[in-house]
Figure (tube, one colour):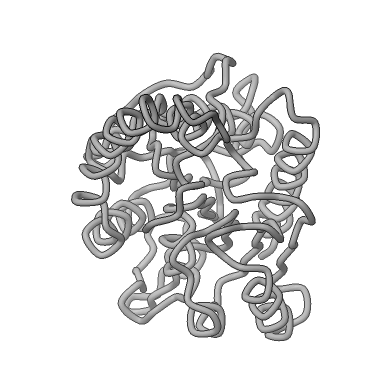
Length: 297
């Protein structure tokens, strides 16, 4: 995972409204609908490299919860090894054009500080090392009584950057991802396994293999990427869109946003009007997808 844009961006100044809990043994930020409204579904939010404590991730989870009426879980799938949010400003400084003195005298120290934040994450949070933790968490959601009154519990996923790869893997619905649902969860016939997720949304994922990862998708999937994303080149994105949307009409979608860079859905700079518009587009896309598939029988 070598994309420098994975570590850049802006830290929100808003205040989260959810709470921290232990869900199935994992520290989790939990946000729900206003006024004790019954959630439409559970959304498992798999974060970017800045993890479950990131203000940006929590604020977006709050928006999904309150605007879409969902119960949103942001679990610590990184087991405490997320990149500190202060790295965003540091990486912005590193890539920003500067004079020769700053380049020679200051940037090397910034690079060293940045590496001190990033390397522990890279060593501890590879996709292969963390995916079993993701799978275990969602399996326990599926195999446990629903946390709110519902006749048919739906579970969706939202993944960004690092989390986008996890969601893409779950959306492929491998046989090893099957789980017997319990309680009010759709089909409880013994031995009849169902996919972990009912639907998924992914924004600017990393480490995606085109066409292999896209061809394997089965779960209803919505993808949002920018056409200047360093992690998924425009030609690859266009190829992925063609494959995904040719699978089955209306079951999958992919939007390629002109001018949007990697990280646009969650780490935009508030003084950049275009970046804020890209983030709003991705949020609206996700909410519309969640509402559509949480209502589908």
